[in-house]
Length: 200
Image (cartoon, rainbow, N blue to C red; front, side):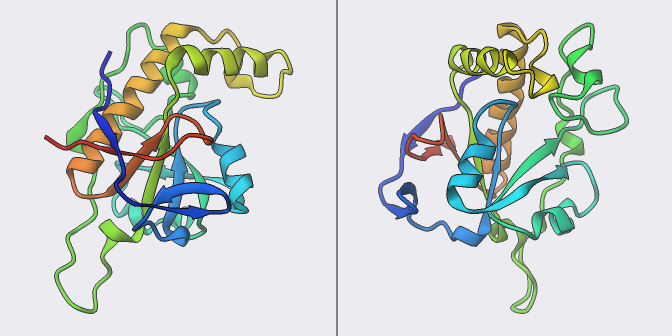
């Protein structure tokens, strides 16, 4: 399974008792990751916006979407896949019930434009995306415990294979977006330190 290469940040800052990259602007933060990874808890601890947002990475000018205007905030990402017209989250039935793992269509992932003029918006630096990506076995444990409460339909019949596939999507997209110049970093849980992605 694909796994990100990471390293600790040389400099960090502490915001509400949580370590962050030193150059992160608090009001730029968008938190994402697969179901059950702790996004909602993390955003609540930060005192961020409680409502979840959505960003379709294949939608024209997705970086201008109103759902990204309120930050810090939990954001679900819609991914483009080969053979599927609309973007899907990793908890959409069409993704989960596919007969074989869907493959990302990177050509349909749109990247914010590079800042060209003094007065134009630097969209690549406007946001900082934190990907919460626990180990698959840890995430399975969390989701099985949550499934007992019956609070989240996405936990029904969850398996380790399903979680590994979902994590693979997030690891791959995090790497890709970081390579395109967006501010992307990860942490394995909301209690762990942030890690920067190594771009080779």
